[in-house]
Image (cartoon, rainbow, N blue to C red; front, side, top):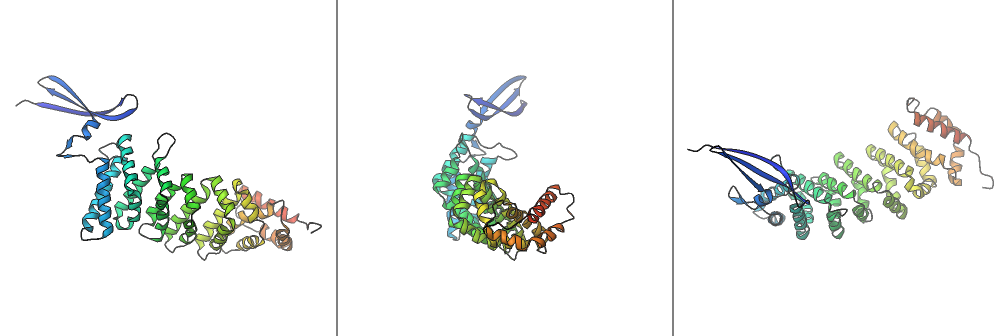
Length: 382
């Protein structure tokens, strides 16, 4: 019998300076002579693997769509369809992320996969049936979606462009917060979408956006927190877009926002108050800030929140209250309230959070407010 020793290794080569792929090589040592065989992985993909040829992106997408459709019908084959959905989702995920034993597929294969997903409308179908997919499958859907979303060709983001033509994908994800079993998966995908201004704009300007004022108050803490993270991302990520949205829709947004500030849920109140401070102090939101701090009802609310039992809420209210006081052009109704409470405010602020001795910025701001309030005078002619 002839003894043959097989040595295997892999390395990366570049074809025509543009296409990078994995090359596998075998060094066969037989009867003292070396033979070297080099095989391109693209060739390997088309070769039978353990008796079966590897599925192409078109095959996997077609199989996944068929199994999702079966799952949606809920017929007797639903259990088998569930298994097939999971299996094909794993195949797609492995194409995109690779495995411990294999690298992710080449850009060409991923491009084919993405195009098949677009053409088949499978992204929307998966999201619409997310509640029917098993636990691991739900996570796989989110991973596949986010990976495909991040794809770039030069400066273009093809999936972002595709979703702009299919906004129902975004609206379906947003309503996902209404279903406990898929809320967190939908949140993961929504925040990835919010990174792109074109998609954030669609979400902000849809009626579905106002549902977030309900989602952030749901009784399940994890879902409420996740919804608030998405809500905050939409209102802060793209500065000019957000400023324009808040300015154009000021009355509607802040009517809803006032309910959050008056919520019976402590976490909701604190998070909303903190976000309000951030929004008002962002220079892009100058017009919105000016409008907000001209309303005496808003000032009264902040003064009441300064006396809240919770020290955290007191502290966040302070950062909104200081904007009213620091405004050099106070409208008469605002000035009148501050003058009526001048002595009480000075006395209150002198004793306010005195244990924050190490917080230099806070103490400087507090000293500034006390000085400003002490120096307030009625404007003659008013």
